[in-house]
Length: 333
Picture 1 (cartoon, rainbow, N blue to C red):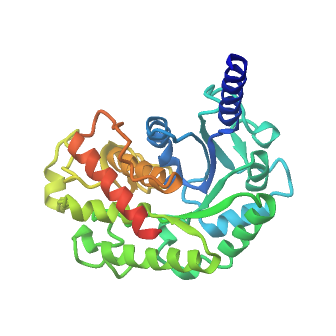
Picture 2 (spheres, rainbow, N blue to C red):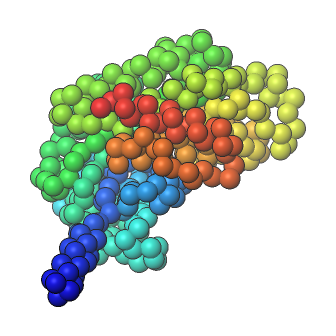
């Protein structure tokens, strides 16, 4: 009897060990731009903190890269030395950030789409439109169809998902005339109008190819309404009255941030030190909301087991962000 019990115990231990060996991180590649690069700030820490969530994540990044440019880059990639993308990655299976999990597909932190699609056996590959074109359905095709076909050709095992991007904050004159909330800007619609249009475009693309959406934009909208966000951009007079170093209150807005300094290379007044506003990217609070949304979507989680929050967020805000993210994902199922 003792011998049989010992054999049975050994068999159970062996089966458990085999099961543990078979468990591997979910491997996710984002073909994106700065709106996927922002995931690097909080997604790895969130995944590490959520029980049962093991994640190997990488993103290909060119700032402002549209679906059209992604496809053009694919067409140019017959030249193996054509590597226009910066590669950002964080693999739980390879914690040494100085390593290279992609082999010859990455040289000097640079790669291209076909090389990266074949470098790893990805479980999920995501795509997204550049934010400035996200609201215009006409800019999606035929580039999205071509890119999806290429992913299915080179990574047939991968599930393709679409990241729904978000509407800009009300400091952006393209959606608000003279940065006035509720007054359409040069695009002819306001913040809600941008959200409605980009959502319609992403939803149509997802339906055409039977793809799931990671609803980052819906989570941002839900948070704006739930708090509610009270951001109102300063008037020209209020901006002029601010002294160097004084920053306008963002009123809990998760998109956008003010800073004092010189501009980027493409700014006409790039050499002028002044108050500037990034009205399109997530700020550090928004990066946590985005990470929660991706985590809920990728691991089909309600995030109830996620206790982690960055130090700069209050427990109340972090909890609300997790709730908004989980609800946005649930609504898309």
